[in-house]
Length: 362
Image (tube, rainbow, N blue to C red):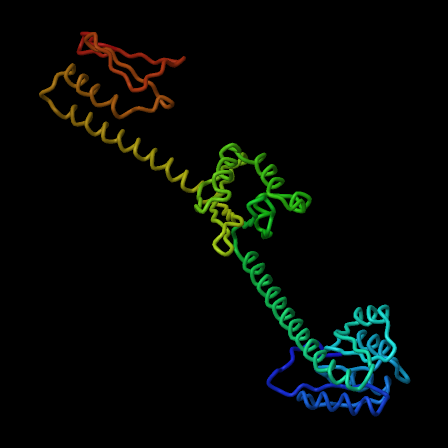
């Protein structure tokens, strides 16, 4: 039955289907319904009632239990196979608790015994009010559930659209949500994710990190804290992640934490290469300056060989400070000049410093 669960429009008159084989009861119930502002359609037995109920949407059903063709219970059973029932009130002259339970399972809102016409007129308005209130609550609940599902779907789509890995956990370690990117970045197998606890995820992560103790310390310090955190995680295989986290709050109370992981391995490697090249460039620049200063010494004709060597030795050790490339030492006039730091090597090349036939040093 399409549209049976749609919300009742309180600004319009509600339409009711009254199904009862007793003309006197139909007139009495119709009078009560019309006085309450309802528009009433009639059906004199269960067969006609079933056809009318399937043909259009009603805001309310009032059904007699004992009727030809289909009883009230059978009518509700057939209608329930087509979809949820609208608010439904069942009238009966010979009811039982067992029957009431079965009717409630089918979706009945209220159950009235037809003892006397006066009692029926007194009880029916109350039953109508309860049925419509229940229907409105049901409609509001459905709207809220629909809105919640849409919100969850939007959140999930947002999580999946980001290039970062995202994990949300409660303060007691329960996993609230994560995206596929998180599982891919951390290479977490499905069986670990299915455990649903951050303990299992942390244990799996520790095996991949260079500094597992620091990783644990960071988690312990931030869990339950209102502080946002940012740091870098270095993996054994060379990967580098940036980790950003912030508290998850509900009504001003911290209920968990959201962790955001970004793979910055490529950027980190480029930055490291840039730093290395910059350091090499600085070294080469110092060497060039040193060579330039030494070349100027040889251009000075007023200096003796001894003076040139002494001046050069003052310049060279401060520029060439890479013991992995070369380790140099010079002895002149009993004074030793060497690069810093100086390292003794297995292979050595020695040369004398001569001024004509005079040995100045080595």
